[in-house]
Length: 182
Image 1: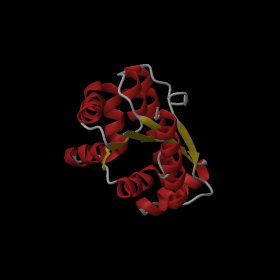
Image 2: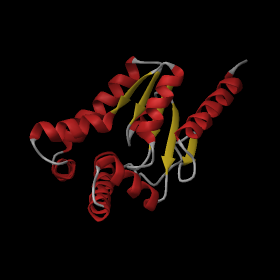
Image 3: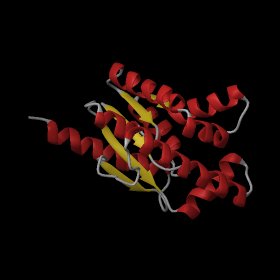
């Protein structure tokens, strides 16, 4: 089964992806890492690469084409990216699509810890990144990231930890599989 995990920065998607990968024995592809690696290879920040991507669609399209390629080639995989649910849906690729979210306060605290960043700086960079991505996705694909109708499961991670998140996901997957059996 293809599984997509999406959500804003700090929602817990990368942690959930890793733990779900372990639980299911599926390979996990985290496309945010590819974007960060691309920025690092150019010697610039993620925010700077995001600003460049607003003027140069080839930056996003390169990563997005890899998402589709990996999705088409792999039946049992977890794809973690902001657009994986939308891209698989738009291209007729079957997947179980998960959206994870948390309040801005919780997300910013998590990002500060993860990035070892000052709170105000982490907030500013994250907001800038989210706004840039929303503009690009609408401009390049006509995708409104506030439209959650493509998702099969939506999880608020404010008050639950990674183990509970994975339990919810596995429960929903088992329920879906039970419904699909003849």
